[in-house]
Amino acid sequence: MKNSVIIGTGHYVPQKVVTNDDLAKFMDTSDEWIQERTGIKERRWVSGDETQSYMSEKAARMALEDAGMQPEDVEFIVFAGIAAEYMFPGGACFLGERLGLPGVPALDIRQACSGFIYALSIADKFIKTGTYKNVLVVCSEIQSTSINKSTEGRDISVIFADGAGAALLTASDNTTKGVLTTHLHADGNHKEELVLRKPSINDPQRISAETPADPDIYPYMNGRYVFKHAIVNFSTVIGEALAATGNQVADIDLLIPHQANKRISEMVGKKLGLREDQVFHNIQKYGNTTAASIPIGLSEAIREGRIKEGSLVCMAAFGAGFTWGSVLVRF
Image (tube, rainbow, N blue to C red; front, side, top):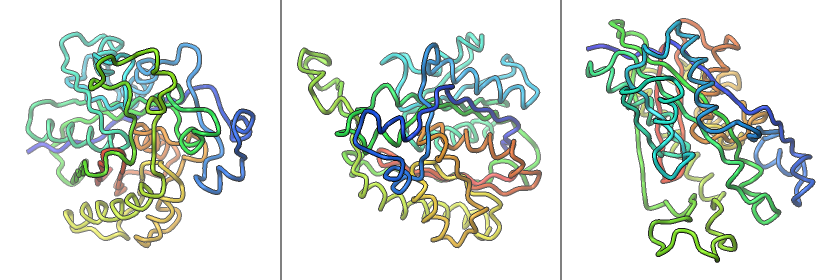
């Protein structure tokens, strides 16, 4: 059986930097309030021509260049995004068009913050079964255009941001490196705690004269509820990955958690007994970019020299659905 190895990574973040002081100009908040609760100092919001597909192409081409490959080498695209430029089709087909890949299968998944973990697992299985040799995984997110940028919506709007990340996986005969194990979970009993309800196909008219005044057009999050479940499930699913491979926490060279909240990542690290240098953080400069946060972090960590040949890297996420999962990779 072939193993799947990550041979290229890439990322793109919008040019527009929005600081906490910028947010304080149009909502009742402050730099101190935001940093204390989230660890975020600034984030990136799209502007101009920075569409979801534009960002996904930038991240994808960076990953391809990193791998020394061309777009035509890609045999399958797995695309994760909490929403797409159109209600349908999804972002995968937009990216396929931009890369010039007519006929190459493109799959969309909507697993919110867990999107990269789910997408990586899908890519890994297609490679392990011998279906495809080279699979491109891309996550691209735009949250800034859907959030309530008033004091009423600040619990959401100070956190979420925009960006894209990508990873190129290829088949390898070396079973000692690459994706060692993946673990996925979901529990729809908690679906109402982190949700965007409208527009909905359940409405007789998806958009009506009353729509702009409906609070359900903005994302809702029960912050404390999500925080509590994230801490527990992060730790549990990381433990599953270690147990499945016979590794210990001390064997992890770097944990790249979904960048939901720096306080969550810090608490997970402490709960597992990880040193500070074993946990990757970039939420302070990018905010929560949903599915894109882990591949952005992976791409940066590699370029910063924090991931080297032989490094054992654990990636884990928790998000809406609730969905959560982990991946253990030997580089």
